[in-house]
Image 1 (cartoon, rainbow, N blue to C red):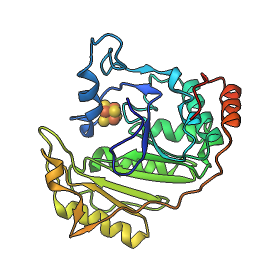
Image 2: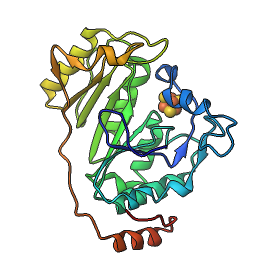
Image 3: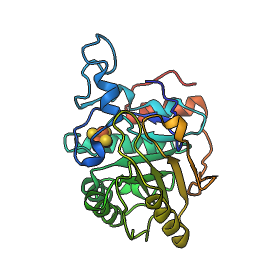
Image 4: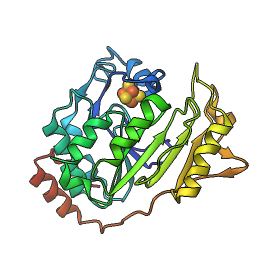
Length: 267
Ligand code: SF4
């Protein structure tokens, strides 16, 4: 897939893992699954195996060849913290993020217990890097709110919530230790509706807690028609970004070789 992304809160996607399995109601209309399954059996296509989970080690070094700083959504087409992704592989992904520190990474998972455990142990070297943001998905009270508690208990410099698809009123949300909140409704065929009051409740709680708020979309069957204005306003806030200098092309190649990732053409 192209690295450029149409997702409103990022610049690029990086998928060193492809595929996943469903874990909670937010997964019901998983866009990644729908996309990947379209290509199952198409010889030579990156998604020839549909949405079956697999590692893509040849993608590991990709951020090292993107020299223009970007916000990178880590794993839009799967979940890096899925139980079947080996811990060593997750560590290899984190090493690349630490080395290619001129980007900002947005790592999003529904496997909140695993991300907590690893950030507090073997991923400690990446957890405290301010250019790596660690997030969990929140769709409802039962599955989503416990993930926030797991994330809060993780030793991370920057923590965020992707509240999408928002499926019900979340009620009071503990935003202590949370640095960014994204909210969005489900889109596409069969999209489950999102009520305005649910969104306003989260926005107001973010305002009171001083947490940047990003309203991504209303969603629905035709998301272009519903847009992303909330009470006539676009909410597009982000946490403060740390910008590190970009190394030379030679230094990028040397970093890639030190990490043992495949060397790509540096652009
Ligand atoms: S966790 Fe994410 S990628 Fe995996 S099935 Fe659910 S929505 Fe899809």
